[in-house]
Amino acid sequence: MSTSASASASARPTSSDVAEQCARHVLHELISTEQQYVEDLVSGIERYSHIFSPLPSLPVGLAGQQHVLLPYVTQIAKLHRYRLLPLMLQHRNQLELLFERWYALIDQDFFNCYVLFAASQRTSLQLYHKHELYFKQRLQITLGDPLGIRSFLLKPVQRVTKYPLLLSRFIQAFYEHRQLISKRVFEVACRLETRLRELLERANQSDQLNDIKHFNAFSILNEASFITVGEFQLNDGRLRRSYSCKLFAFNTCLIYTESKGRKQLLRGNFLLPDVCFVALSKSFILCNKQRECEFLCQPAVLQKWETIVRQLLDQLAAAEEAEAEAEACQTDSASGQQQQQQQQQQQLAAERDAISRTTWYALH
Image (cartoon, rainbow, N blue to C red; front, side, top):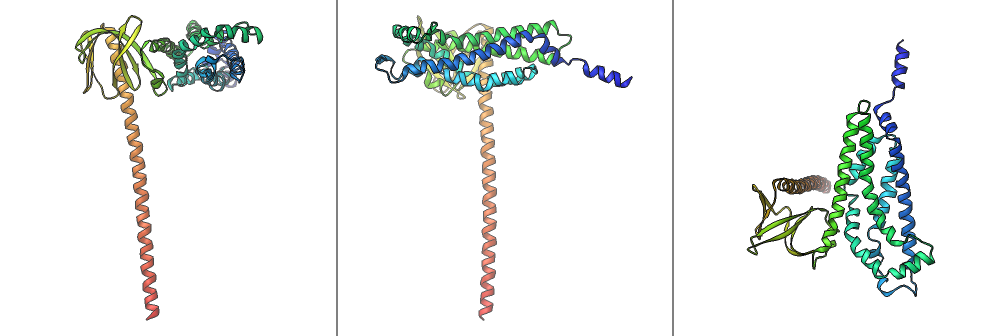
């Protein structure tokens, strides 16, 4: 009886088994489309990189512009080929672990290449349209590429847009079988779906950095992560006037601009952590020793930006504390080594004195 009951219990499917079974079709679509996406990226990079080889027919405006036409595509391909796709294949029967590790990749900023790609896409498409006739003749006719490079440049945007939709289908399947699936699987899937939507929103918003006149966004983007952007009515204490503005948040600074139609004029910045955030009833104030700005907004927007700024300041404070602890450990280690060296030197000096005394006695 006991053996039979034990065998029955072991044969009973686990929560992880049920989760994989009820979402099998979605999982198959996720992995198969991911494999196709990686193949498309790799083949596209190989195909379109060849047009930049030394060719007499290459237009002057395209020479040396591969990084402009294909911005961050190589980084995106590496992310999916060597990290995300292997993760999906390895944990296809462990959805909870798959979602957790996927979430960790986003949390560690591996997917920031999509934000950089989206911010670069406007310039990339401008270069394409400038030489559209050449691309059609060279690629779509000569190389037999009917879709062309413009279609290839849209693939990363299409892919990152599809992830939240696929996760929503996972969540729906889990909900329909919620009595058999652990709450943990459901929660991890929801957290990942939320983070993917945040990534998509960041990528979409990063295009607005191109609207700032006389501003090289990539001087910041290559060293810092773009977080979000908001629109406000700003009371500028330094200029002593009010105007419509946009506030761009990075993990190292806050930049504010004046809106002039579709264009943005850079008006100032606040470096983190050297900024003070003051929440009022219908506005918030950012200030430092040089300037003070009041951003008028609704309470919900106020709460959102207070959370963003507080989290950025807490992250920087934690990073500084960790760095200080590391330096202290290094100092303690160096101090210990110094003390050990001093003890060794003292021991050697004592041995030399002993040898000298022995020699003196032997001579006399």
